[in-house]
Amino acid sequence: MAGIGVGELDLDGLDGDVLSLTPAPGGPPIGPGEVYVLVRLRGLPVGTVLGRVREGEDPAQVLAAAARKQLNGFVPEERPVSAPAPARATVVVATRERSAQLARALDSLLVQDHPDHEIVVVDNNPATDRTRELVERHYAPLGVRYAVEPVPGLAAAHNRGVAVAHGEILAFTDDDVIADRRWLSSLAAPFAVDPRLGCVTGLILPARLTTPAQILLESHGGFTKGFAPRHFDPRRPPPDEPLFPFTAGRFGSGANMAFRADVIRSVGGFDPATGTGTPARGGDDLYAFARVVVAGHRLSYTPEALVWHHHRETWQDLENQAYGYGAGLTAYLTAIIARRPALLPALLARVPRGLAHALAISAHRDAGEQAVPGEHGSHSHPWPRSLSRLERRGMLYGPLGYLRARRRVRGHRLPWEVTG
Image (cartoon, rainbow, N blue to C red; front, side):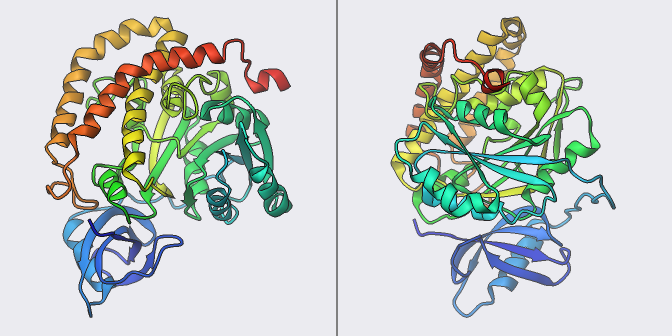
């Protein structure tokens, strides 16, 4: 399976000229071969397209023609003429022993166009001083703050970020992303116009598609939640979400999310017995999304808030990811019921329809019905049944993993309770 080039194509409308064609941040120039591009209309992300550029062809014209064909009839939503200034924001980046990746992420965060923000790096259960030295030598002079969280796990690290943050809006991303320059302002903007909004998530696209594992993951959805803004309101459950609000994975992903500071603190932050780095293997973001919605706050997804994610490269990484997804899902559901037992009847009432819905999606994926980035529907890269089996094994393990993790953090107080 050959690698696929990744880039951005900006058009002056679907019938207009090509404004620019650029590689994904830090990537090689766009050349012959298969190319996967984010399509923008005058800067607004509207879709992705996979095209093949032959020797001697103009990549911009080939990909523009493919975009016009695929997006024919698309009408983008009108942007507001003016919007209130976004509130002060804090970006929290949790990391552990990945200083090279962290530096790349921080470089992109330092050039954000948000007018009033800070950056906090949380070093989770560090084994060396590399992260601290990187931040203190190269990024602290630029205003980046450093914090340590000794309790292992992504949720515990995020809670440390919540505790030390000064912003009214708390944005979270990972150390393996490159943020679009407008990411933070786009992620924070919806909070300024909707006082009931508790959480906003954004678009995650692949920064590279160079290995079979990366291509396969993105072929079957990756982390992308689409290009249409979505709004989730607990007062008006969406008809296409039979397990709402328990299908928190449909809301977004932890590499691109933001919360009102007072809201995430009021629901108790992230459950420290969930997340990467704990026996639960994941589910920290899902838990936070669900807790915010269950508490009565709205959640929105905006594709304008974009980060480029460096997918894991090897087949073993993909197997670990599949197992971790399954474990994180049921661990998060266990966490929700353990901390809010009154929600159990509502969850059980939704299980029959939810299982039918999930099995239908799984059957389509096993049949290879989503298979090429930007061109879902072909059968070039069918989803291996071995990965589906791993995901289901993870789902069986998730509750046990959560209970093991919870025993480890028993008596652990939230950082803002300790420091406040």
